[in-house]
Image (tube, rainbow, N blue to C red; front, side, top):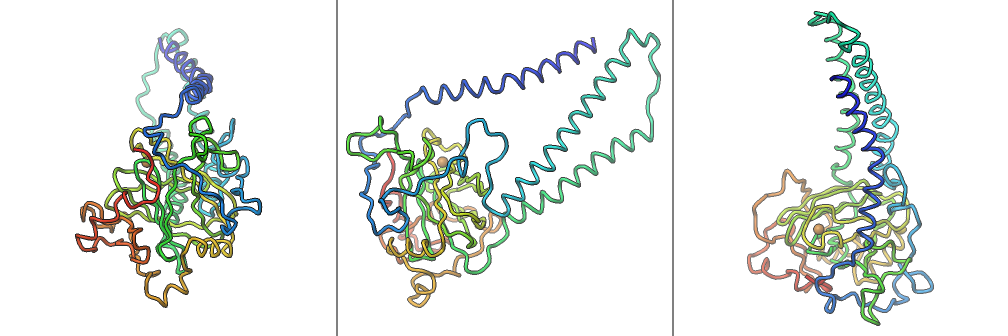
Length: 386
Ligand SMILES: [Cu+2]
């Protein structure tokens, strides 16, 4: 009887190992076979603004900078986490690959071996007279202390990594505010003259009307390419602030080791520094409705000089210049963490007000009530079909 139980465990393990790729393949097939549901195909504003040579992020030919394969995006058949381009991400990847996976493997094999030994050695047929042993102090102390030691060994680097992700950024950090909307992302650079942009997923050529912009390989992978990329400087600390306009979304960027919930009425904050220039892709990672899967995140990391040029091309200002006019408060954003943000302040206190780009964003929920009513999704430049 016990032998049968063991065999069924083995069978389940084998099934899980061999069945997983098949399931994944089925899911992938279903994914490619189904047309992308578009709630509002006619009014969705995926029309290409003609690339302007003045945009410093465009290459000399006027095309978007093409992403590099295997970097900042998923790869077919790839095991493990994506290549990391932040310090915390690299530490976390190393912790996962070099400590957690070997440890899990050793523990699993050890338990499997113990189980197999017990099942075979102490089976009823081989033991007509069962042992009456009820406890063994030494063994009990070992099997209590060994897991405790393993857990402590895992907890110390884990907690250090967790703390590193939520450490307040140093002075001079670039603030990026990401707002989740059903179903697109809008962004704001409050320290840079209130530059705003809206990012919608780029559709496939077969899904758009003639003349409308569609995804090309240079834009990025299907379902991950966005019509507008978030531009961030390399080597400069970034303060990411997230919130949402309707339901909970999550700003997730695997290559940065970032997954930050975007909650209506709240501000969440994290910080990171991108180490390598490139194009990186992520997705909303909180189930937020029918088109949850179609609100990608595309980040283009460039040199600080290119970033400054891009900000100027977008009509913004670099913080040094802006501070003198008093229009933007680089240090005025409160250091908010999920724990310190007032929870139930207002309905929509964190809406950007793109009508007047020089108005500081009401990040602390103290904007007058009449201002809170403005700046809703209607003022965003390219709201997606809903
Ligand atoms: Cu979402």
